[in-house]
Length: 138
Length: 337
Image 1: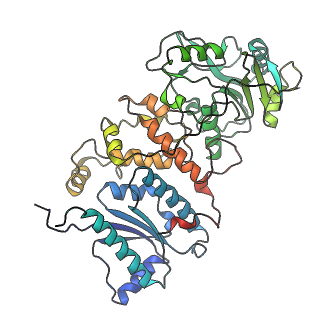
Image 2: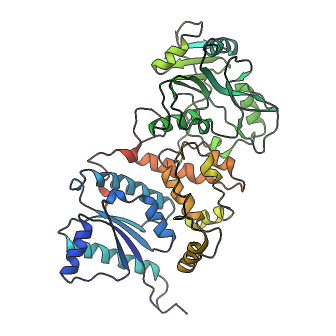
Image 3: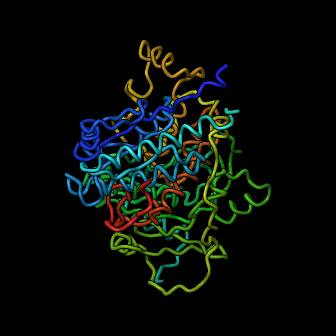
């Protein structure tokens, strides 16, 4: 039944309100487009994201999750994203042990990089869509 | 390495000297009916079992939130229990000033759930019994990361002929050693327990995980018995992660889950992540599980993998910081996608 219809992946994103969320707002005002099924959630800092949120999102139906913050060294709270980096590195290692790599991504996107934001998210979306529809074509 | 040669009698005398004073207690193992369990000695040490062939509970579980400064404690426990204590010290759950932790060499243990009664409490006899019929050693003990008593303030190590030595590692340990009537001697011999073998990084997949945990009834015993799962207000106590009632029905309709109880994977995965840097691989979770799920395999495997990422080992040293609570500016460059 659903063999022919293309299935769209759902992506949940946690975006730092000082960098990535600003970039997404800028992308909006520049009329850039990114896939509709990407849901961006604003967090005060990327280190606010407990990996529990990511795990919960994935097991409740999201196909991919990204966590995104300022470039290392540029954190509004001085050192928040260094902690994020450690936490996400460990989480990725854990997903690798469960043979689920690719589901979690970490991006560094500053407030000025609207184009980079669109590129990264579209790439992730396309990857996940290919994975989801693998073997469903012809 | 300088240490003192001891035997059971000398240790008993020293412990009695310590315990006779008011507000000083000894925490170790002792015969309790036909089994050996944890025991607290408040005024007299009579039948202390230095080694314990049974594993029921991790001894650190009783010592959450010990802040009392006027009670002195001497602990004689296994390496995994001392390591859990050290992790709790790092997490500010224990004030370590008045606690002297002494780790003892561990010959491996059998599960208290299925064990025969009246096993011996002598080191070499336990080891002999374990070798004879494979002893039914627990999975966690077969693949133990560190069985040597090299943690805490002092350590009791066993020589190849069964003689025991005690070595101080810190000032508190030296203070305790002063109670023993022996001279400090340089030790150069061999020990029974050697460094454990390194294991391969743990790899599994979601299907196996799902199969193994399909029996789970979500009783949360594994969380309650975990020595390092210490949060007073656990994430899973509320309704957010494991919903009930209307919220539960709504979640069912929204996510399309059909298998109950809802949230098994979420519960175990999140807990696995949360204890990843502090897990000591003692296997208390598996011991507490009423469904005999091989929990330790996953928790120990994942935690060792994640600790290797930061070249960290839980409970190795009080001075080390838990990796999630610190950082280096120049590291993990390839984490970004």
